[in-house]
Amino acid sequence: MARSPAKKEDMDPADILHLLRKAGMSYADVDRAYGLKRGGAFHAARIPHFDGEIAIAEMLSLSPRQIWPSRFDPQSGMRLKPQPAANNKPKRALRHREKTATCGQKREGRAA
Image 1 (cartoon, rainbow, N blue to C red):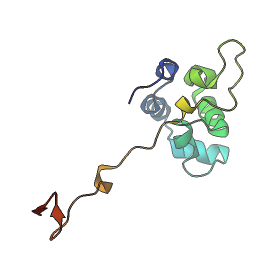
Image 2 (image 1 turned 180 degrees about the vertical axis):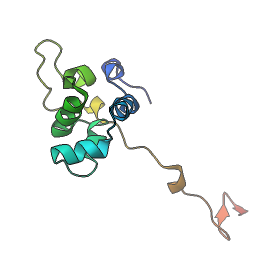
Image 3 (image 1 turned 120 degrees about the vertical axis):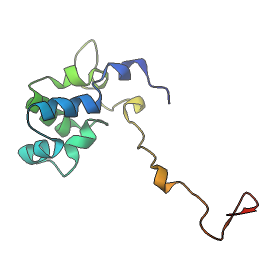
Image 4 (image 1 turned 30 degrees about the horizontal axis):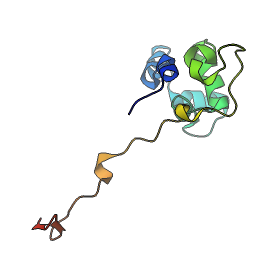
C-alpha cells in the first residue's frame, strides 16, 4: 500500500516501542501512568489519538510534533483537526482469518 510522503516522516511504531523499551517502559506502562484505556498508547502510535500522543511524547521527553510531524500543520505547528485520512492506517489483515476451504468443502470446483 502506498503511503503519503508526509507519513514517511513519522516515527515508526516499532521505533517508538524501541525507545520506550530502552527507557525500561512499555505501551502498557504509558497507559497506566497517564490513565489511558488499555491499548491507548499502542493505538496512538499508529493512528491519531491526542491523549495517547501526549503521554508517549512525555514519557520519551520529546514533542509530539517530533514523533508525528504529519499530524501537525508545518507552518503554524498546530495539531491538524480533523486529521487527514492518510494518517489513519488500516488495521492489519490477519492471515489466519482468511477464508480457506476446510475438510469436505469444495474449493474452486475441486474437493479439498
